[in-house]
Length: 277
Length: 335
Ligand SMILES: Cc1cc2nc3c(=O)[nH]c(=O)nc-3n(C[C@H](O)[C@H](O)[C@H](O)COP(=O)(O)OP(=O)(O)OC[C@H]3O[C@@H](n4cnc5c(N)ncnc54)[C@H](O)[C@@H]3O)c2cc1C
Image (cartoon, rainbow over all chains, first blue to last red; front, side):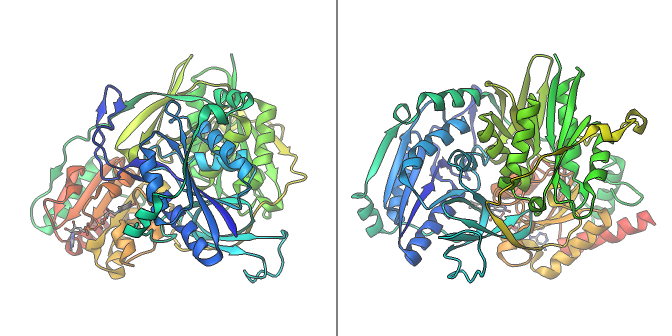
């Protein structure tokens, strides 16, 4: 049986408009979802469970509203959920990584699955910091995951005993096949799978599953606090993107449109007459 | 006060990537004219003895010292394998900043490095604002729907990754400045490197010479392109422009092209000089990957398509008509 932890963040719905009020993002009335990449990670854990038997623990660091995301994870088949309630340091990736690592360390897990990045902060840094803090190998941007002994994976020679993960990962367009020993951390890329939706019986069952709340003050020892302080970064301001100057429609026949566009691009030196741009 | 800055050099095959030259520019910005040394960390297996020539090239672009980490396990590149060598170099040099490209490669290395050093990490920086006593870093959040300005609060070294195509690449400095390159090139001790993962094989899915994330011109197609044959038309225009082909997710989902070409929130983020969107409606998730392009051209049959709201030039028309015309007219101009 595999013990799998899935790192899960609740994020703004990707369709939401962002309103900036007084230099910060206004969350009022916004719809929240499970970070889409984390959904792939969760779905993969569920598939591993169907194939190999596994226990799935979903963990989130976040405000109270994150319990909705955790409940949805329980409803699709996760076994237990942990919310690390932290309301202060949510934009400090190293702080989040330390909280997660402190929670996971005593669990003796086989596999940690996470999303490639969170669509709100966009850093892609928390999961890999967790891997480093727990001294685990990792593979990121997985589009296929297989688990098993060398024999089961038809691998003749492996430098490692025990369970392995064979990952196909997306590396700037190329597919790389990587082998690594468990325990390991793997991040999910789009294309790994198609996440399922919760069913009504699933939602009912989820109500009885354990959702534990932990507090950062209990998790972090003084040396961790020192390290977090040393690695602090802070946000001074949230800004709106620069407004683009209004564009223009190019009219005429297709011939005219094409030549007029090229003329303007040449005039503004966006393209050049001779050779490559 | 003089600060050291380390950049992590990245190569494609044996050539330095453009983002590495941009990292040198970032380092120069962070030094803001004060005396300080730019170091480069360069790793590879050196089957082809090319590391020294890459190191020499770095020196000509304004890097002062190059640290070469050479090991059979360093190619294909794996963050966890190269990390101890890099960490050693950083611990020894104690730089103020470590600048890494926000590429597939750098995105993996930077957070692990930061955690190993207990350093702060600011990812995917698009603008560096630096003065003598303060530096802050602007980066996109919510897939480019907003930006945030951050600064490091903790203890140096500080780790940052820069989004490709947002800094000008460094320019060649006078080669005469380097009298004895060997004095500026150091070998890193890489004994005892352990493999924590093995790359079994790599399948090239796209044979493009131009990397989408670094392309200056992109011709992208959406569902409106209707099939792989439609993408062939886009490719002709891209070739004529010396650019790369990209796609919307709908085009990838429909099997018109490989997912490797997908641009957007779940695909690649690009910042070319020119982005030509053909048969792409302009869904928010697509805009997330390309709305920072310098000049945007949209070709779409539907005048109401949201893509026009961010386009500098809009052509309401049939891409099957307009795109080939652009290609032939361009060819004529250039003859
Ligand atoms: C979580 C999530 C993540 C996503 N990530 C991404 C992502 O990374 N990238 C991405 O692109 N999408 C992404 N999407 C999908 C996105 O929402 C859109 O579905 C997608 O971008 C639409 O692609 P499209 O514009 O090619 O297709 P459509 O929306 O179908 O638009 C086709 C367009 O082509 C035009 N057209 C048709 N024929 C012609 C012709 N002959 N000449 C000219 N124009 C023509 C039509 O007028 C139309 O505007 C994501 C969605 C979700 C939910």
